Length: 268
Image (cartoon, rainbow, N blue to C red; front, top):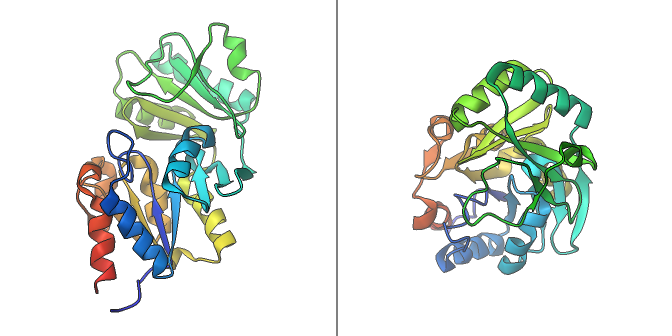
């Protein structure tokens, strides 16, 4: 058997490592364990902030580094400790939102507060997805800006996610970064932040290079990670924008797409 060809396996969570019920199949767990036994590291790279990620990592028995919050946070799961955390300039974010609303009309807002226990605040009209993780409603707009934030979520009553992301990027792309991370999830981030920036920081701590990394994902927010890694693998259920830049398309998250690729690489 040849050595496993990568030293780092980077996986998104939702729509990639996790199935629809937020579980990880035994087949995928076994494939990742085999990769680690072969000398590679597995790192989770997710748009979720640490409070929305920690329980998944604990369930996996995962004790390494994780990149959370679209790259804003590098988290040590074994020590339950934030190693790095980047926050959004709230004044700049407010300016960006006002410019977008001048173009498309009122937006519904939510935001992720910084920190190990940072709450997700949800404003009036913001549609929380079924089965969503814990959040705290607010009525007074000043509450949104009362503490440091990693990101702001935006929704529009009529524009699609792709349309909203495009218009927002065209309007304020010089002030903030904008990503579409899933159904109903358009996010405003610090300018220059992406999963690739967080992954590169974590990889440096692990002594691993981009050329030694394979990445798995399903949404446009994974595009920078694919550009950084040596190989990008999109799930069958992935957004078309990600499939267009992927080196390979595997099976869906429901059909053990990560395991399909890892098993093939392990058996070479």
